[in-house]
Length: 211
Ligand SMILES: C[S@@+](CC[C@H](N)C(=O)[O-])C[C@H]1O[C@@H](n2cnc3c(N)ncnc32)[C@H](O)[C@@H]1O
Image (cartoon, rainbow, N blue to C red; front, side):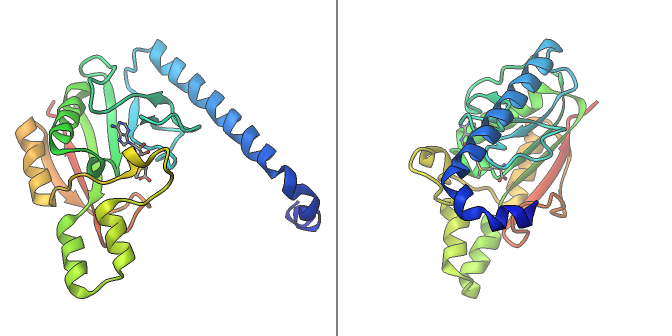
């Protein structure tokens, strides 16, 4: 198939937008069906990928939440507002490259919402840039573009700039302490095993809502 596409690519090229359009339409349909199925169950037992955006984590397993209605987003809402779920229904939450996009009061609000909507015993994983590691990178003379991307966010498009820019960062010990203050237990830094983002400048913290 690849050989055929390569051979006729000159002719296919002007119509490649059709492939993108069809794929987006298919993804939107799938996401909307998945969201409706879980809504009918009151989201009891659902797993959330908070701000999966363009790059969802295990989309067959986790519902992708984002403020921007990208094709693979299942639920569109602003995490700075109250989450549209009852208390204690969500089985698991992962938040990757999200916290740094919010101001500190909004991060606290979001973590409290995670605690409220998780089931007792539910696991939270949070991965976000590590400001201490970034500072060490500056002192070491690491690549300035990489450092800037981690500090200020990657520019993706003017349309989404408000949500792509970075606003605040926690050190790992501060994040662990904050999660304990909210009520989570056993918050600890674990190896970056999620297969996304640069482990050099990013941490992963796992915590649990007590039973
Ligand atoms: C860097 S992307 C992370 C995407 C993916 N989780 C990853 O690790 O590659 C950050 C996402 O957060 C979303 N976002 C930013 N502010 C938000 C808000 N207030 N509510 C919901 N989503 C938001 C953006 O739209 C964007 O998709």
